[in-house]
Amino acid sequence: MNYLFSFIYLFCLVFTVNSQFIDSSSMDTLYLSKKKKISINGYLDSYFTYDFNQPKSRSIPYFVSAANHNHFSINLSYLDLKYTNTRFRARFIPGFGSYMKANYTNEKGFMKNIVEASVGICLSKKRNIWLEYGILSSPFTNETAISKDHFMYTRSLAPEYLPYYLTGIKASIPLTSKWNLYTYILNGWQQISDQNNTKSFATQLEYRPNVLNVLNWNTYVGDERSHLSPTFRMRYFSDFYWIYSPKKKWNIITCIYGGWQKFSNQKHAFWWQANVSGKWNFSKKQNLAGRIEYFYDPQNCMITNLLKNEKISIFSAGICYNVNIQKHILFRVDARQFYTQKPMFTYQFSSHTNNTFVLTGNITVWF
Image (cartoon, rainbow, N blue to C red; front, side):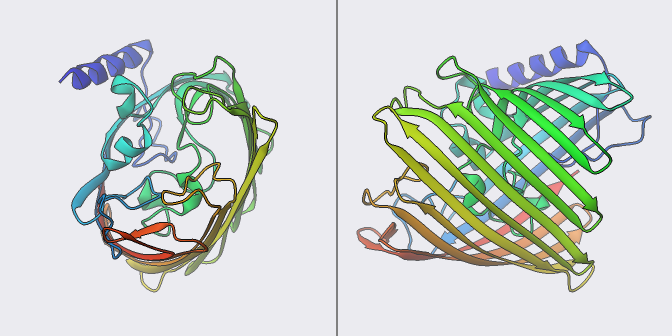
């Protein structure tokens, strides 16, 4: 009940600053007509996941999203509250579900249940330059917590080990009709509360040469020392993704990134990943998507091997059948096979294995 009062208080505080919201059914920006300044939208992502290794913990190893094994769960549910006018905009999104529990474990109090909370001011109406402050969605990779916006229901390993949210200041600067620049000053790598009193920096450069292509390049640099990671020092990271839609029936996305982490003992770690996804729309309401990916983390910087302290090398292939039951109801069946060089997965209660098969069913509803 205290959480509910906190959410109502925060929304009222944002609402009284000024008044105008944007309609959106997810984290993306889908603008309403100018007359509709306030919007309240909802989202419910439910799932059932079965790991054929039957892990004793009833949790899919190395995952944040849709990670509960063998029971019906809510991955993410939220209300999206927006207000906007030509000079001001605000957004508040309280969220609940297994995704929130797994991804916000280091946050305190009601902060564990805030997907996004931000206010923005238009610095130049003519050039559409905006400055925003608060808890913001992350620009890294093409995948977010909002499953309905992606080819497959389950996320690749790529976003699971990057920030899903950021806290700080964001500047949005359209450079030309095809180029957009976003710059960030942040508390750190997915941190609402600053862990070390130093600030981090990130950039996002987006290029849309035509209606068929979107190219995006992101960077991050910051000191990552904290009470949880006292030996961490500077982190440097960059990712690139390309969205290609050659025909109405086909869509392709590819993403590659790499990171470099320094430590207090002068050592450093490097990790990288690459994936490619495709989607075939064989009818107006049905499509089939697939993905292959590879994640390499030899010093266990981002992924800690739960069984042995050995280098992480994971290959995954998956396929997903998607059905738009109605305009705002999506049903999906997602299957993925994982392989590793060394045993990383628990098989039932005791033995270890280097592979696992995961099957997930999902229904997502939004308004």
